[in-house]
Length: 367
Image (cartoon, rainbow, N blue to C red):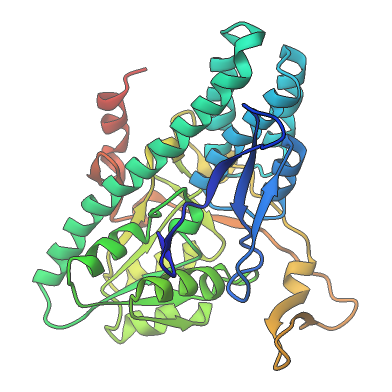
C-alpha cells in the first residue's frame, strides 16, 4: 500500500552491509500509529518474538510472516536442530491465539530440518520471502472475491454502501492489502460509493488508530464510532454489511476474532445484516471443531484496560488512567462468534457458507 508517495509492505528484509548474505528485518511499529510513523529494525529472533508480544507487529497473517522471518533470523545466529527448536518455542509462546503463527513456524521447521545445516540460513530467508509473497497474493484474491459480494449488495440498494468493521484487518494486519479491508479497497478503487463505520475497538483501539489511519491514507470515506454504537446503527438501517477478519476459524466455521466481534454478529443477526468474515485459508484450523472450548484466548495485561494513550495539545503521546486506583480489570483479547451467525467466509478460493467450509478445504488440499 502507498504511504505518501512510497509503496510499503508491513515487513521486509534489509541487507546487513557489514555481513554480506546476512539480513535484518524491518517492520512498521504499529504501536506508534497513528501519531508517528516509525520503522524498527530487528536483529534476532528474540527481538521478533518481543515485537509480536508487544503488538508492534500484529494481525494473524502478519504474525505468520513475522514468525517466518523470526526463524530466518534465528538460523543466522545458529542453524542447529537444537537452536531452531528453541527459536520456534520462543515464537510460539509470544501470542497463543492466532493459528497463522504456528502454521508458519511449523512450515519453516519442516523445511529447515529436512536439509543440511549449512544450507539452512539461505533457505530460511527464501522460504520466509515465499510466505510473505503468498500472503500478498492471497489477500489480492480475497479482495476480488469480496468485491463481487459488495457489488451484489450494492445492486440491490440505491445510494452509498455502508460497511461496518471491527478491529484492524487491513494491510497493517497482513503483509499487504489486508483481509477484511481488502474488498473495501478494491470497491473504492473500482469507483463504488462506499463508507466505512470504524469500531474504535477497545481496549487497544486498533480501529480508531490503525483502521482509520489506513482508510485515510487510501482516501476511503469513514467514520469512527464507539464500540457500543454498531447495534444502534444497524437498527436504523445505516449498516449494509459487517466485514471482519479473524485470528482463527474452526473447520465448521466458528470465528475467533478481536473481543467484541461476537456482539457485532449478534446485532447483525437480529437486524438481518450480512456478517462476512475475510480470512486466508492458513487461518482455518482444520484440527479445531469446538472453538469455544479449544481455542486458547489470550489474556492481555490489565493496564491496557486501565490506561489510554492519546496525543496531547503539546504534540506528545501520553497515557492517562481511566479507572479508579485499585480497580480489578479483565482483558480477554478475543471472543468466538458461532458459525450460525456468519453469513459467508471470504477466502482466496471464493466465498463459502460455514457449512461448506470443510468441503472446500478438502477440495483444495485433501488430507
